[in-house]
Amino acid sequence: MDLDNLVLMANRIGQFFEAMPDRQEAVDGIATHIRKFWEPRMRHELAAAIADGRAGQLRPLVAEALAARPEVLA
Image (cartoon, rainbow, N blue to C red; front, side, top):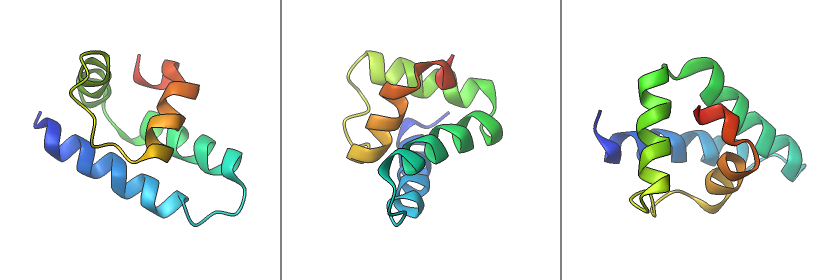
């Protein structure tokens, strides 16, 4: 998988949820979307990139969601 594309897709999901007035609902929405709709190899690739410090272009809300719900990427 192309890491740049994964980050782009995660950021687009985050951009959608940023419009929500409830930040916790947005965090949960991002995590839930990625868990439900991304296949495991996509989630694992993003997890590895985050662990290695290669996913620095993630929007802050996306990074927050994935840090708050690390099981999503497992």
